[in-house]
Length: 218
Ligand SMILES: C[S@@+](CC[C@H](N)C(=O)[O-])C[C@H]1O[C@@H](n2cnc3c(N)ncnc32)[C@H](O)[C@@H]1O
Image (cartoon, rainbow, N blue to C red):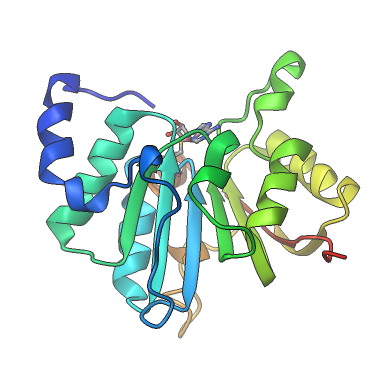
């Protein structure tokens, strides 16, 4: 993801400080009475999807992570502008997410338009690689699930296989997610467009969607 105006980052970080969680502050503390449900977007980009979702579900708390500080600065600034209170962003690689989020605490993990890493030698970096599925499995609360959207059919097929091989259940899978939500489902996460989704839909690319649940913990 290209970020223009990197020189603005320190000022953005300062302005949106209340929307940013620093890794060295330890686990994110969320008031369970206020927010019984917590959801996570891995690779949240500039926060377009998450800030909109948080506005529509004010009783759910959302955490967005991305590995680049410039991107987190933009995401936090967007939520600050929209005055969304139930969302927090953190600059962290998903490999270290366990220093931020307690086990079995997340209802839904969103993987939106993750980098496809098409070359075989880079497949370990795909966010649906088995070691990441293990991490997600630990984070998910009982009854929790992953929702994934992508424009990349190859990544989609590969991910379906990765989930199945790792013992996950693919509960839903669509090769062309509807552009508009069926009546009454407008607030469902899958119909909230991400920044990349808007771009790909504009080019007429079909969007693949899946929902998968982890193997039961024994
Ligand atoms: C193609 S962008 C998609 C952004 C957004 N989800 C959307 O749909 O518009 C993928 C994002 O994932 C982030 N990312 C990639 N690998 C990551 C990792 N291991 N941990 C955290 N974020 C990661 C990238 O920095 C980038 O911002």
